[in-house]
Length: 151
Image (cartoon, rainbow, N blue to C red; front, side):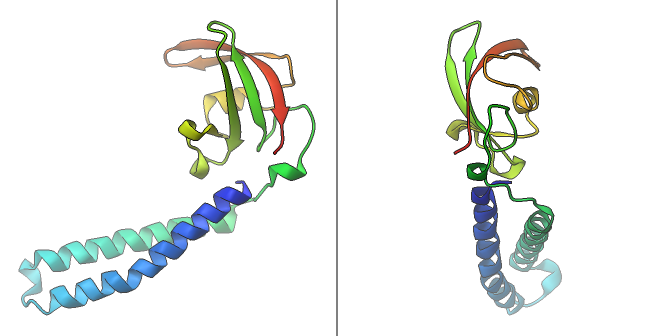
């Protein structure tokens, strides 16, 4: 993942850990309402606590296994993780720019595509001027790789 992706996960982890005390307080308040077997507030708070803890474990696991790659330290004209690429759709002449990032930081609306996306997988190892054919459920798309940057 990129340093930005790691930062976003760390921020989410801090938020989830901060929520622990509120959830615990909600459980305590619900417990005071009496019979726990029929207490919907108690069960809802316990479920929120379980989901919160599962998210915390998931993020901690991702961060512990992550290899953080700063695109600014990379260079060259071959596409690799972290590259910002400019593509021209050969059928529509539409030009698009994407950065190849980790799965957790992908956001197509902001031009960030996951390394596991079919388009990104098709781009890895390519150089400027290459024609790329991407097989998608809606049919094949043809692109020409116009630029590769590491920013």
